[in-house]
Length: 249
Image 1 (tube, rainbow, N blue to C red):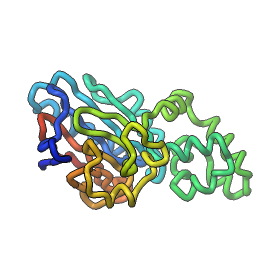
Image 2 (image 1 turned 30 degrees about the vertical axis):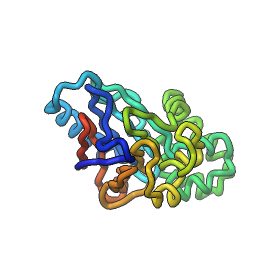
Image 3 (image 1 turned 60 degrees about the vertical axis):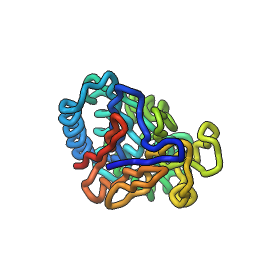
Image 4 (image 1 turned 90 degrees about the horizontal axis):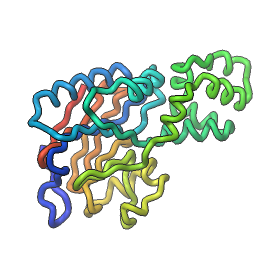
């Protein structure tokens, strides 16, 4: 796979000596995350010597899949050794945190796969639904079940991270706005204006959020959400020495 970017940068690159893997939307699929991390470890072992090994997770760790809790646990304490890790905030983590602050947003979270997340933490969602429990009862049950370390993880998530000629975000960026001035709402929610923009953004934007059967490669962006929760295909973009390739489950 070859990538090109804006005029003046024929081949986007990382800092010399860096090997980087960006991982797309996981959505509670611990099985796929485990499999992809094995592929990454094996690939890194075969790679040219790298002084810096980096993992970037693009957000949407929770909802829809069966083991959101397990995914977060793995990210917190079970990643390959000798890698630095950066964890970005997805819109689903934003929805989760919003529910903890405002119980009235319960139905929005449930429509977006929140029941699966609550179940993974041991919340009896079937009972709460059966008795018609008020939204605050759901919030209290989830808050009580959520480990403090997991809450800290959700609250610590970054909105973006940049290395070399690449910017990593969950959803995308708003065209015409300097990269340093992007809002959280756009970084974790944007679709159409970003996806349909053909001009350079200043850096190649690597993102998730918008699923496709295969990664989307454009001159100004690379999308790596391959709908893992539905397709069984979790994707990582591997970057080193001006070249890139994909690893997939």
